[in-house]
Amino acid sequence: MKIQNQTNPHPAVTKPQRLLSIDALRGFDMLLIAGGGTFLVLLENKTGLAWVDWIAEQLKHPAWNGFTFYDFIFPLFLFIAGVSIPFSLIKGIEKGLSKSELYKKAFRRMLLLIVLGILDKNQPVTFFEPSQIRVASVLGRIGVAGFLATLLYLNFSWKNRIIWVAGILLTYYAVLFLIPVPGFGAGNLTMEGNLVGWFDRHFLPGRLLQKTYDENGLLTQFPALCLTVLGSLAGDMLRTSWKDGKKLSYLLLAGIAGIVIGLIWSLHFPINKHLWTSSFILLTSGMAFIFLGLFYYIIDMLKYQRWAFFFQVIGMNSLTIYLAYHFIDFAHTSHILFAGLYAPVPEPFHNALEALGGLALVWLMMYFLYRKKIFIKI
Picture 1 (cartoon, rainbow, N blue to C red):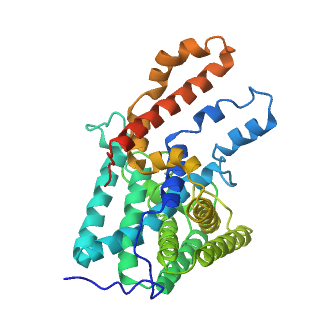
Picture 2 (cartoon, helix red, strand yellow; picture 1 turned 180 degrees about the vertical axis):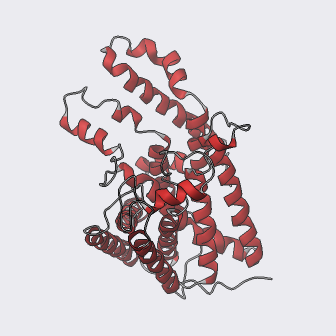
Picture 3 (cartoon, rainbow, N blue to C red; picture 1 turned 30 degrees about the horizontal axis):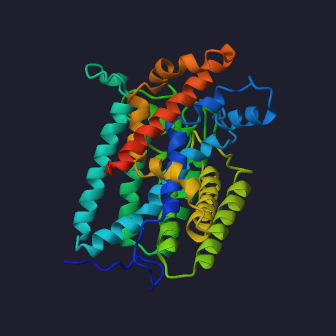
């Protein structure tokens, strides 16, 4: 039995097709998530170039409140995961899959990502010391957000999904300010006294990444979900039969609105990636709309596509590069292969060049898989 998609915000849509801009943006983002910018960080204070040092600073997370470009990388991936949802679900619907089958597929994907996330964040896994196993992870967050966003997409219109996002962000805001934390009171957003940390310490099993809280813990899953839901709205925009210029305009307008509202909200609810504050979600989702719009404009509208191939190769195997960077020591292989080449260079630059060599090796691995048409999906 085929299901009719009642959640599409526009009656006329184009046939779902793979957009190079989405793959390229996913590849750009996943490269940085996996550690592809490490060589730039390692160049800090070594070149005497202010712009290099500035970039290096932007590839580090602030200690608490504040924002750098690196804070944007994971939210962008959650957003891109949402962009893909309409394309994936409509494809399943056209194949005759029922809602329950689509639910099961998304649920299985979530469980697999949670398991892979646990394996990734616990090397080696302390099977006989479960209290030392970190349950929260990047992959687990992506899996949970993808599953919940799928449920919302299949059951609610685009307007109602916006209401869901607004409701979650406002509720999260109220919860953090109104519910008192023992010993600290209500509205405490410090590293030690916030409700998110208290909740993780009492209800999240296993090891917490930051000892007193885990940035991918329980309560922060709710605002993080909003990024994927908003991404599904962007995916719907790209699927419409609108002219390209109109799609681009709506993506940019949505981006500007998110950034402006997020910055205004931050005057009372600080931008903070550790807490995934509502202002942080709106700021990063606004940036994600704009990045998607720019990639779409340059790659799919203007057809300047050759430069995007580097990122496309990664974007079509994003899970593979993430796990490869964590389970394969590319830096060691880079040292073995290239140490003789950069030996004449001053020693302070060696670790940066070693990291750059590792980046080249991992890209070549992704290119090999691309040429062989091997794409590992979940």
